Structures are given as structure tokens and as C-alpha cells.
Amino acid sequence: MFIARTNFKRVWAVCVCVVVGVYATPSHSLTYSNKHHVRTQSVKTAKIETPLRTLNNSELDLNEKAFTHYQTYLQSDFLEDVNDSSAYEAIREYITQHHNDIRDKDAEEISKEIVEQGRLYQIDPKFAAAVISAESGFNKEAISKSGAKGLGQLMDSTYADFGIQNPYNIQENVRGTVLYLKDLISLWNGHSLQLSLAITSYLRGPVLVKKAEGKFSDHTLQYLGLILKKYNTLCAIESKIQKKHTNESDKDAVTSLN
Image (spheres, rainbow, N blue to C red):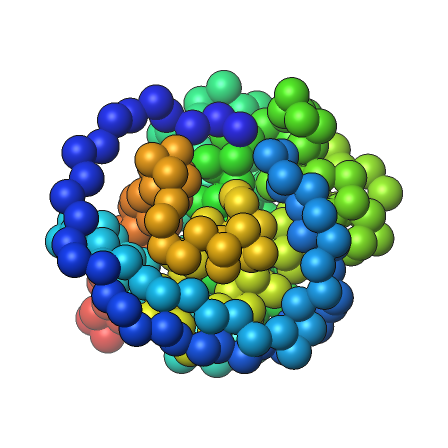
């Protein structure tokens, strides 16, 4: 995994002794795996309960912004209103700015595939791009010491569960990553920290996230903060692109009237 080494000063508030029960019915009974832990756990119709510890203000702000961005995406009509062009441009620009070691051809294909798979499975492609950025730096041939492979750093048992034959294939790995994220987001549906719990579950697995009871290591919290920041940055880039497109359309409309 490619994660920036950054130390965070974390100020924690008093523990919240509220237990929130969430029922989830993902479309698969998955083998949940990651580069640190491998275990099989059927989560279909599973009851997930976890007491939450209050995040500090900056962490809550990151989570709130990300959740707002994601809800905005979900409220659009996936088949009609989602602007594939702006999402593609935002991801492509992000790769150019932050991962300039990636070949242009790969960057174009990865961006295109993330948008297409996100649209197909109703996952914000910018969220998937943020996870892939943290996991592999968009390196399609990345492999970790524990054997996690490809863009989304999927373990063998995880990508096999989604029928992936070649984890280094851009289309296959992006599809597996998006499907895995979809199930994890669905698992925590209705939870106030839905995206944050999905992200930590991607790293640790949902079973360990449940057992942790909100007491995550600094490494896990660093990973969470990194992805939330990346996602918010991608959303900001897309917003600028959309405004640019709107301004250009307005100018064209005025020109046509003259």
C-alpha cells in the first residue's frame, strides 16, 4: 500500500456509549480479505453493531464533507444526470497532478474504467478513485508484501470471489474494487459515519472494524483521513470543471443569440 507517512495529533473527545445497530444485505456473501488479515465471513443479513468514539473536529469535518459529496452523487439520476465527462476529467487531472509517474495511456484507461464501473454499480467514481490512489497510486502492477494486487490492492480470495481472472488487468481490478466498495458501503448503510466505516473496513475488514469498537490504530486513522482528503479534493476538482463547462455553455449561448 502506498500511504504518505504523516503523523497526526489526535485529540479525542469523551467516548459515546451509544450502540448503533445496522442491518445490511449486500448482494454477495463475501470472502473479506485485505493485505493484513484474511478471513471468510458471510455478512449477508448480518447485524453490525459498534459503539462509536467521537472524532475530533477536523476529522468530523472531513467525514461530513465527504458524506455530503457522496449524498449529492446519490441524489442524481444515475442513468440521466451523472456527468461522466466531468468525473472523468477530474480523475484524469488528479492522476496527472498527484501521480505523474503513471503513463498517459494507463491514466486515460483507468479514469475511463472507474467512471464506467462507478456508473454501472452506482458508486461515486471519485470515491473509488480516492481509494485506488491511496492503495496503489494508480499503479496497475502494484503488489504488496502480503500479496495484495493491482489498482485496488485486492487479495486473491477477494478478487476470486468477484470472478476476476487477472488482477493486473485495469478493467477487472477496477470492477472488483468498485463491487467490494459497494458492498462495504451497503454494509454500513444508515450509519452516521457510513463512508468512514466503509473505508476502515476496506483496510481492516468489517469483522475487525466491528470488534475494534471505534478504537482504531493511528495507522488506520491515517488511512481513513488520507482517503477522505483525496475524495474531497477530487470533488473540488470536478466542481471547478463543471463550472468551467457551464461558463463555456453560457458564452456559446450568448454568441448564438448575437
